[in-house]
Image (cartoon, rainbow, N blue to C red; front, side, top):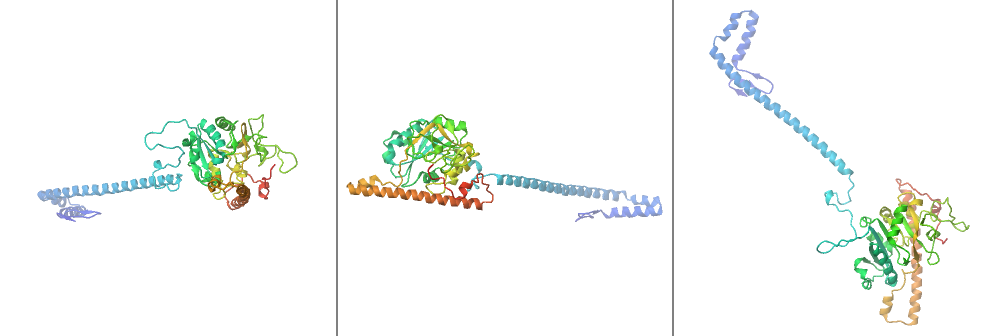
Length: 433
């Protein structure tokens, strides 16, 4: 740029012509060693002052320009540093966020608004809920109207211990339970001809029951005269049982396996003994079902952690869950011979009543035909249906075994904690002991 005779660019400045003359005369005076030539430069003092003032102005302008360029450069460097720090912070935050375990589908929501669990507590349409002393355990049972009186005894026992109670109505009848005072205090779920495992898979998701320390998932044909829920829970906690069941009273109960039979002088037991030479033998060296590390499934009790594992193992389409009890040890949260047990101090009676597959009495009554022939035909039909139910249960057991075997063979990341050869070679522990 041209400013009053001074040439300025980004690299250097050439001052006014008088400066050029000054430099030229300095060089000439140096070569001739004549001071007279040097002094001649200053003859025109007025002209030099004018040139000096002009140069001073442009020098000052140059200084401020240089300062502006310097400050701009520093500011840009600061911006780059701040941007770098910001990017590093964002990358760090992004890495931290990637490592967070968020429920699938909630990634677009702020973490604080995500409600990942629920419960079975009912809420009023308005106002605050009533304060209750509900315990942190759940009692769920599959029921039919034919077992109404026995179920009433069971429900009252658990409600008295402040349990949350949930009834699975497998016969579709709900209204006839309303004559019980407690009916409005429990959860009713109804679906015709479904098992408790069908209900449990669909309505007891681990995130729904996450608030409950223990889940009791029982059949309806159990006598509870000598059973106290709260004392049972206390024993289970004391013993460290993740999976358990109350013992069955011998002589009054239908007992399928000796490990579930009550020991009268014991509080709990974790194994059974059998040395009759028939079938599977059990002794102190036994480490697998049916001698230790398992229970039956008519009255199982699961800890919260165990239930989360068991729920995933329940097959959606295998509603009878045969074979599930053999594998419960994998969900015992540790050594199955220690974390699975039978409580003798709080025992029950297993009546062994057949329910699924029986004829619907309500439908028979509505037909108006009460002849002996009709009754006999209905009875025969009921027997046939129960046979079909048992056949289906056994078929599901075989399917479950095949699925387990295939899953174990194809999952390279899974380690079998209990590689029991007895269960691998196709043997069955189902025959009665």
